Image 1 (cartoon, rainbow over the protein chains, first blue to last red):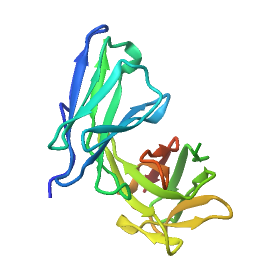
Image 2 (cartoon, one colour):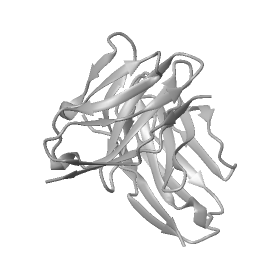
Image 3 (cartoon, rainbow over the protein chains, first blue to last red):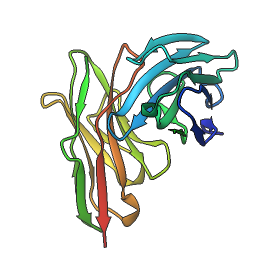
Length: 111
Length: 113
């Protein structure tokens, strides 16, 4: 059974640009969550999608957005990048909320 | 709102010694509890979880944890660690009605020969 796939693994962007990260969940999982991991703030919840609907949202500015497609794949977008957006972005998929499987993450560096 | 406290930022231990990583949580409602491990440059791997039932939960790689409701704790234990257990360990909580994990700040386990 394939795990959660996140692409790309590494990304370098310039301040002011925008970026799109992709997450393919485990087959059959309809819930996809996104987390940001930084040394200073730790692991923080961004948002969660279920059946193409955003079900929960964390305390991040509107520059952070996401969506989920009918095949449960999800993308997150960050516009007008800031240096502080440099982080490891993790995606997790879940069948029923009782267990979350994480991908390897996308490491975003903003210069 | 829930919160998770991992008091130990770093725990050094010798190989084959036992270890306990502490986790305390606060929540006004019923919770699910999780322990994850993160190796360098990787994502999070689920070690074990408590949803209901027996308070002693066994996970992968010889780890176990005990849910203590009165002390609001979910400490992780392993009777004998290996060098390969060197990693960052995260405790997380989720209330039963909200699909969001709240993580602790992590504990770095350093196993030396």
